[in-house]
Image (cartoon, rainbow, N blue to C red):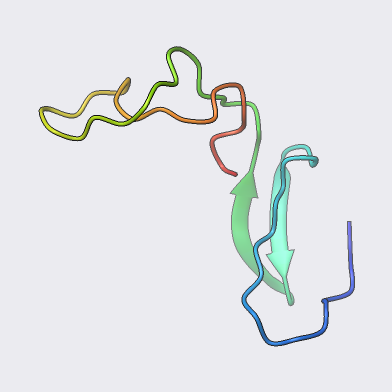
Length: 68
């Protein structure tokens, strides 16, 4: 997909949630691959930072792509 840049000088974010997997190019430069297949699953409660890190700590947006 292509689009015209909006007017202004504010920073922009590109939300790829509606796109399938592939490569992302901006201004002719590759910024990497994207694929929405990996989604956070499980308990998406609040964050509890103290203690040892594990994969279940601080999950958010369950069911959404991890690269969003």
